Image (cartoon, rainbow, N blue to C red; front, side):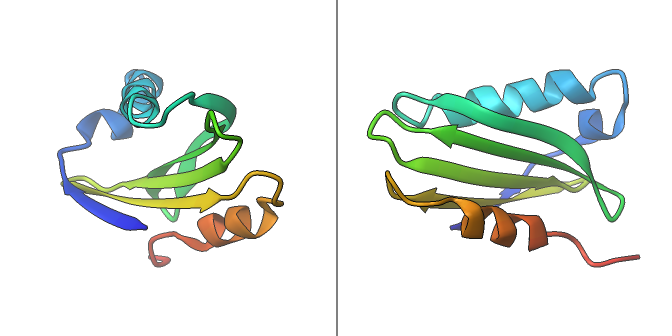
Length: 103
């Protein structure tokens, strides 16, 4: 699923507040996923836009792969659910391609 949220992401562009802002986003995601257990997290830039990559496991064993693109005035989030016992490699590859156009 792809979701667009109208939100100001100024803290994502400030080095001093970037990690704390990513923590807030992850807390919001984890609060909606039953049994959330982080597998991986990366905060980087994609073509000049901050991007938060998360991979987590749910209580039922399913893997969730998420990429959040943090534009100045909105965020785009891609979330892919991978059933328990299935390789998440394809979901990771799709999430890696979810990026803003090159400037």
